[in-house]
Length: 126
Image (cartoon, rainbow, N blue to C red; front, side, top):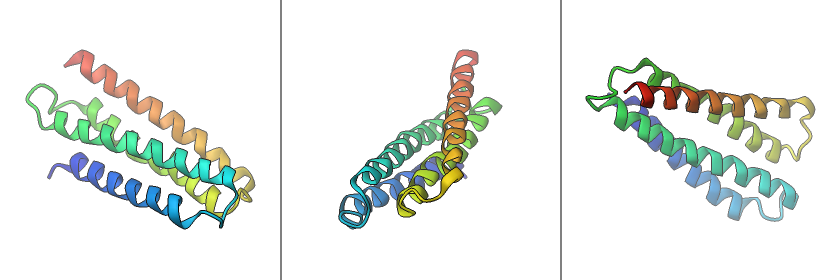
């Protein structure tokens, strides 16, 4: 089963749905500054959905199919999306009233960076 292709497609679908919800469903319900926070979550989710599609395509290629680093990259992109974008969505819906919960967002950013490092090294080794 092409796991990362499916994960990328699902993540992109959710990103589009959440983007539409943010543009239409949140207007007038949350402060404008939190609309921007929501949009940042959607933006990074979409970037990494596309990255997951790339990982899925490369995992099915003869050059990179066996690369454990690509698997790491894909997994880090998924977990990073949950931490980074997910924490921004929750922060927006809570109106910023979650205190230290926002500390999860940078963890997601570090996971994204680690995923990109794995991706780059896999490309160099490939």
